[in-house]
Length: 314
Length: 297
Image (cartoon, rainbow over all chains, first blue to last red; front, side, top):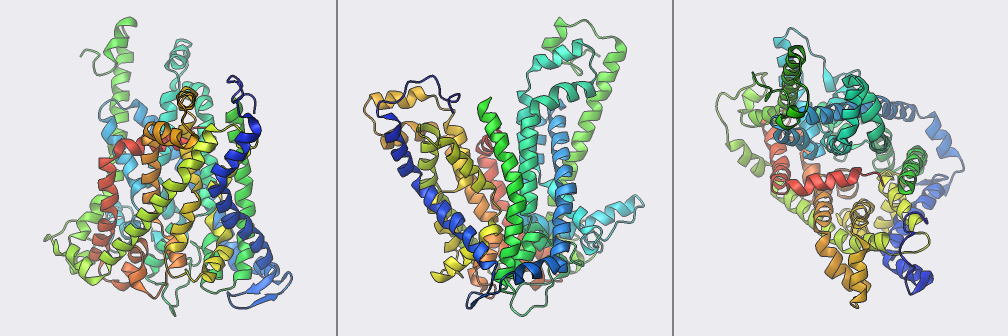
C-alpha cells in the first residue's frame, strides 16, 4: 500500500473524508456487484438444493448434486472444456507469440501484415464460426478441395467427433490477433541493449530468445495464459454455432436439436449449463453446474490476482 | 550487393564489416522470415476471400466444390435482406450496442476515476474486485439473474443486457483505470488548487486527457454488444424473429436456408462489414486500447 503512493503528502481532508467520498463514487459499481454477483451467487447455492423451474420451488436436498455427478453429459462436457484448456489455449498462445516475434523481424510491410493478422479477431464470433464451418465443409468448402490438390484427403472437420475440436482450435488461432498485439507490444518493450550485450557474448538467436526475451515478457505471457484459460472455461458461442450450423439444427421450440454435435464432442460445460437451465428448465441442476464452473474459474482468477498484486508491488 | 538488404544502414557503419558467410546467412534469413510472413498473411486473408467468392455464386454453384464464381451474382446481397429480417436485426443490435455503450460510459468513467485518483483504505481491494468481476464467467450467476429479470417481466427483451451497464462494466473500469493512473497527479493537484471540485476536475481535466482510453472502451463495448451471442440468446424469445439481434439471426440463417451456402456467406459478410469499416477509421484507437489491456498492473 505504502509503496504505490508514498511520496505525496496526505491530502488536507484526511483519509476518512476520502474514504466516504470514494464509497460514494464507487457506489454504482458496488451496487452492481451486490445485485449481479453477491445476491445471485448466494441464490445459486440456494437453488442448487431445490427443484426450480421458474414457477415451482421445492427443497430436494442433495438430489441435484447427485444427479449432476451421475450425468454422463457433465463428464463429457467437462472433458471437452478440459481439452480446450489443455490444447487450444497453448496452441493459441504459442501461435500468437510466434507471429508477434515474426512481426518484429519483418522489415518490409510490417504495418500491412500487422493489420492482416489482427483483423480476423474483429470478425464477429458467429460470423467467423459460420464461415469456418463452410470453409471446412468436406463437400462444398475450399479447404479439403485445396488439400486435394496436394493429394491429401482432408478429414470431415466439424462433422467428425475427432476433428471438431481441432477445427475450433484453427478458428481460435485465426482470431488470436488481440493477444498477438499484446505480445508484440511486450516484445518491442524489451530494451535493445540487452540483445546487443547477449550478441557480444556470442548468444545464438534461440539462446537470446530463451535468456533475454522470455524472462522480460513472462509477466505478459502469464497474464495472457491465465485469462486464456478463464475464457476457455467460458467457451460457448463458437462451439454452439459450429454444432448448429454443421448439424443444420435450430433452437426454435419443438426442435430435436441435440447440443454438442457431432456426438457431444462440442458440448462444453457452459453450453450444458445453458441447455439444462434454459431449455430443459432444470434450474437446480444448472445451479450445480454454475458452482462447479465458478470453482474452476476462481482458481485461475486467484492466480491472476496474485499476478496483479506482484506487479503493483514492483 | 551492398548491405542495405541485410542490415539497417545506421548501425552498419559502427560494426565491423560482416564476413561474406554472415552476409549470405542474413540474406537467407531475410528471405525466410518474409516468405513465412507472406504465407501466413495469405492464410489469414483466405477465409474472407473464399467467403466473398461464395457469396457471389449462384445457388447451384455454391453447392459444388468449385472455388471461383462462374457468374457474379450480386443480387445475393439484396436477397439476404428480402428473405430475412436482417434490417430489423441490425436495428435491434444497434440500439442494444449504442444504448449499452452510453450507459457504460456514464457509469464507468467516474468509478475508474475514483479508483485511480482517490486515496482511501481498501483502494487495492476495490481494484482486485473489479478484476474478479471482469473474469467471472457470466454463466455462473445466470440462473438467479434470469429469475430476477423474469420477475420484472423484462425477459424477452434486450433490457436485461442494457440496464446493468448503468451500474458500471468491470472490463471498462479496469481499462480506464489502467490509463488514468498514468496521468501525473500534478494535473489534478493543480486543478484542486484552482478550486475545482472532484467532479469539475473529472470533466475539465481528466476527460480531455483520457480521450483515447474513453474512445477505446466505447468501441470495445459497442463491438462486444454487436458480437454478443450468449446474452441475446438467453433473453430474447427464440420464437420471435423480429426481436433477435444480428448474431442470433446469422446463427440460424443456415438452418432456414440450408441449401443456400451463397446466401449464408453473403449474410456473414454483411454482418462482418460494419466492424471492419469502423476498424479502418479508428485503427489507432484499437491498437492503443488493445495494448492497454495487456499491461501488467
